[in-house]
Amino acid sequence: EYIPPVQVEVVTKRKAIPLDANEGIYVRDVKSGKVRAICGSTYMLTQDEELWAKELPPAVEELLAEGKDPLADRSDRSRPPANIKREKTKVVTFRVPHNAAVQIYDYKEKTARVVFGPELVMLRPDEQFTQLS
Image (cartoon, rainbow, N blue to C red):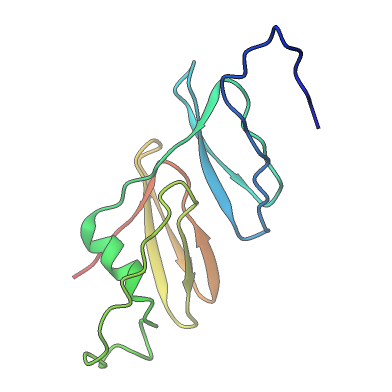
């Protein structure tokens, strides 16, 4: 543990953020403005970094919060939504079920990728889910 001398003014206190293999956080470099995803290891923010909140469209937020299985629960309309609030600084994860697919669009590279289940999708900072009707 670091104990600063009397002459030093403590501006902020930071703690290490432990992350599992399927967890992550979005970090923005204040000087360059670049945003990156840190996944799978303990991470401590540097003096030039801050946590970045990823915004998703309201329809996608609602689908992620419901927590329904797209195949098993597709005809179940009776269950009320779970109303789980997402931590916006944590990496958006979605477990694609067996025999299903998810399309993800990268706005920075202007490319789309399709992930087939069963798979765990972790969105990078510049990616969004493509919602189909």
